[in-house]
Image (tube, rainbow, N blue to C red):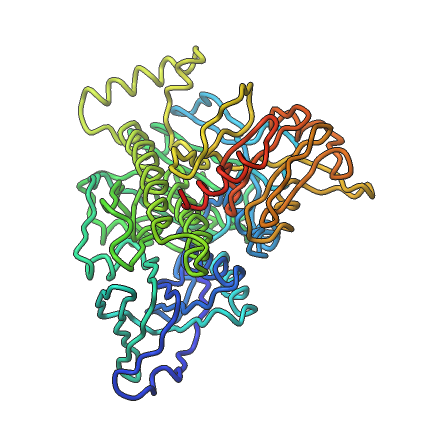
Length: 536
């Protein structure tokens, strides 16, 4: 089977030559150079923080793994300077189709409206995403990426953590004010703090096969219940770049993994699905659903993110995307704490927000699993009834669950200021900002998300003009629409934010809404900013 790999050489670092117990000290050490750890390190570096990034391997690209990246993830990567590269390589899609047997039940469009810079989803092999992130890391002097550096020991102190790191040249130690564990589902750091996952492991097995072929299928997500080529089970088809197609096939819980992964056993299954044998294998793997998380995402000086903190099934694209949401959530908070602008208590809001998001993802993932792989005769009968109803009724279609796809989390957050005005729409406090097309006074077109990036790494006030402008704190960035600011030429920005003259939204550094006002005054802005910064 063909497989794309990028291998990196180990390099000895001067920290390994420090005498005795005189370990080097760093504000942040990130463990794990996957999409989450790489993105977090870039975000911190762009905020001016020095980051050591450790990974126990020396390569990326062993299988496509995560392939579906959401609009929210692309907007985050835009802020990191690599969003366009991801989109240029990725396969853009928004339409999905659900089949029962040989018949289509219905189709859906995840981004039916116009006026967004980024699509609902792209499909892109994880090894491409990681390679582009590593390239970006190489452009930032503030990040020290060390391959074949494995954390084998952890000691927690009052104001720092001590890491013992194993290398081909032997062990050495690092001191870090904070450690962020992005080292995956088998996290060694999770074991070092004595934490466990709680949740459910499902017994049904699923086969993943990435096949290379020329096909006329549209760039859509196709999901089958009980297809004629794989009777009694489910199947999924997705397009990736380079004429690679991702195929997922549900197997029996009693299937032998070693046998099922053999190419000679996989080929007949895929040939039945495609109706031909003109394909080559790129990657074959088996997995089981797991819906689990840590009880606490913060243990002393160690903060857990991505699969190290929580796991969900691959259906729904909730794993990598939720991990990237973890990264953007913790980065600005760590930056403020390290600069002394916010107390360390601000970090607890990371656990409050992202553990609730993990619970939501686990609930959705569990519901999808129960529907796709019924564990009892009662669940199987219910699914059969729902699929029958879906052919004729709209409410039946809504009940079909073929892996509900990832959407941005909405936080019930201690950092949010509750609404005191009347709103008919718009993103509420705790929701992520909405994109919309706007124009410069020169007539050049742009988007709200691009204007937000230009404000840098700070809190930003999104103002709609023709009302009394607030006395704005100097620390805030300002995006003003109307008057002498941007032009809402399409009217979509005003509509999406339920804007009236004088309306304003306070946006956090991660693009989430901290508060919104019809006519803000300086005292209410100061209070909302203090709350969002963890100062009261």
